[in-house]
Length: 73
Image (cartoon, rainbow, N blue to C red; front, side, top):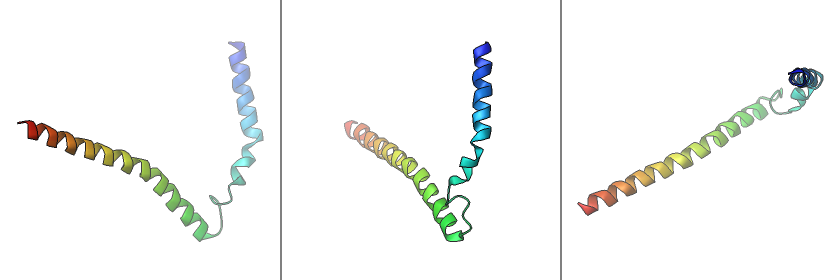
């Protein structure tokens, strides 16, 4: 139990000491509106892309399965 508390305290201290590294991102907190907008668009695109891939595969699989089942009847 004692080691667990030591680890938790250590992680908290490290987080507090290195919290300035959060400000290292030059795009997230940029004063330039164009950079910030590009960052948000890229984040949205990279978030949506895997969802579209998986959704397209599920749609194709469902349609293919439907065609196979109907051709057997």
